[in-house]
Length: 106
Image (cartoon, rainbow, N blue to C red):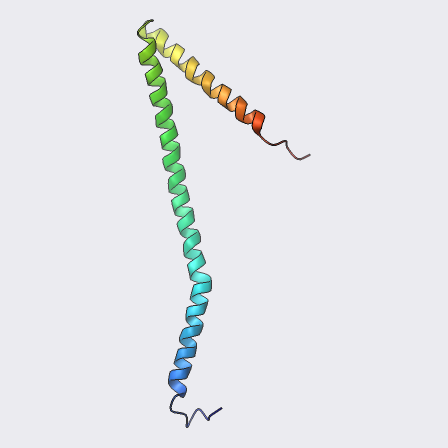
């Protein structure tokens, strides 16, 4: 190994080593943090948009059932029946999902 005071490549070699070390640390720390942050942001956005989509689907389904029922009954009765029909469907789906859940650990 040469004396740093007499080696003309000492400064560039040291700078390359420091740059390589900083790049390695950045790759090991910053990149995973950016991926986690993106996952949190996009996951939250997808959850909010999914919730909005489910709400709009339920409102649309209720309104569609009301539009079908109004052909045979009056508007107030169609509204109540649509709430019972959509609510009953949601209860059946909930009971089905509750039945399929894994048993709780005792």
